[in-house]
Image (cartoon, rainbow, N blue to C red; front, side, top):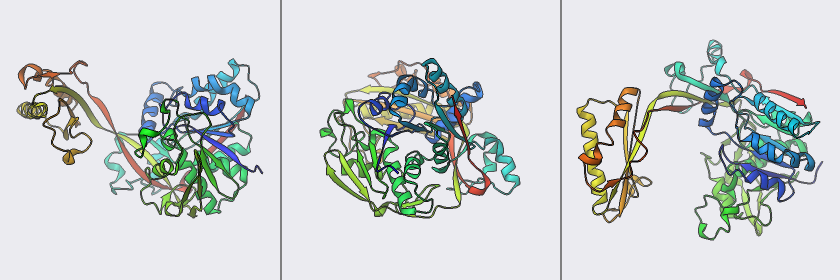
Amino acid sequence: MKQKIRIASGQGFCGDLQTAPIDQVRKGPIDYMMLDYLAEVTMSIMQKQKLKDPKLGYAKDLIPLFDEILPDIVQKNVKVITNGGGVNPLACRDAIFEVAKKKGIKNLKIGVVYGDDILSEIDHLAQRGIFLDNMESGEKLTSVRKDVISANVYFGAKPIVEALEQGAQIVITGRTTDTGLTLAPMMYEFDWKWDDWNKIAAGTVAGHILECGGQASGGNFTGDWRNVPDLANIGFPIAEAYPDGKIFITKHENTGGLVSTATVKEQLLYEIGNPKNYITPDCIADFTTIHVKDISENRVEVSEVQGRPATDSYKVSMAYFDGYTAFSTLTYAWPDALEKAKKADEILRARMNNLGLQFEEIRTEFLGYDSSFGPLARNGESLNEVVMRVGVRGKDKNAIERFGREIAPLILTGPPSVTGFAAGRPKPSEVIAYWPALIPKSAVSPKVEVKDL
């Protein structure tokens, strides 16, 4: 058993800082690197890509990344775990194998975790009495069934551990929990038992800290953000884990950013719901038990985490088509910028009403005044300029298109001092809505496949 392992965060979402994983591999010692690419909406985007091309449906950024760092991770024996396989992890594996062949790398083992995609199984599950109704609203899935475009189960750390046990140096998954990407190396290296709930909770908390990349090392920090050093060269966080469940959060030396109790606590509060019941497939973690302490510069101890047994369900992330939307902006200048923008919105709404256009929602924001704070915004009459941003949403694509033709006329037939209309008419975009559900763990099983180049 290793005395400690260092798990680096390399990506916090699909499209994150491209240099971060390269720096993590090259600027200091690490044993593992986790790359988190998946948000709920990302799965639906990847599903649409796969429908157009069966070889796609994964995080395409992975391929140029491995083209850059594959020799490094092989030489340094760094293991990489990523959910960037999206809805097509097998194709992602094959693409990385092609990179390895091009670079003359041999004996590379890649593990793939799949089986999370249950889109084709929804009706069969319903026949078995598993209906995947909305876990938040209770709405029946039948109300949107014909429009569902993706359905993926959140697996946990177990299948990743299985791939590591089979010798995989790279593990590519579909929809697994973000925390599982970090927990799995600890379960594997320290031989933790699957009912040692406090240790599993500690690994889960570490995963939660790493999952958003630089957000735990000074990025997007609402505290003393002015004094976070050198964000241009931010070092992403690293979890240094020990067999007893103690975790230290740090980053490579000579990198920018900041790791402190404040940055770590802020990340701990991100998307947790009830802090006493942070539910994952692997455990329930009690965030109210976490002790966070500064040890030295850019080194924070996380300890005393308590956990409870996992539930008997997996979460299912589903997406469905829910109509169309379009947005457009106009900028109004001083004097009376806000008054002009509000009048333009009034005129636009009157004209759309006169045309009989029907929308499920019309939303107007005045950027620079109330787009962040809404009704809590302070008086903005002295503003130099205001951007009116109008959005519409509805099922009638023709109505959405007609909205787009009503923006430009405001330039010459509405309030004065308008500018900023340079992108042309807004076009309808599909609205992809989110549908969370629960499924019994007994109803679905992850599949693990490890292949050697």
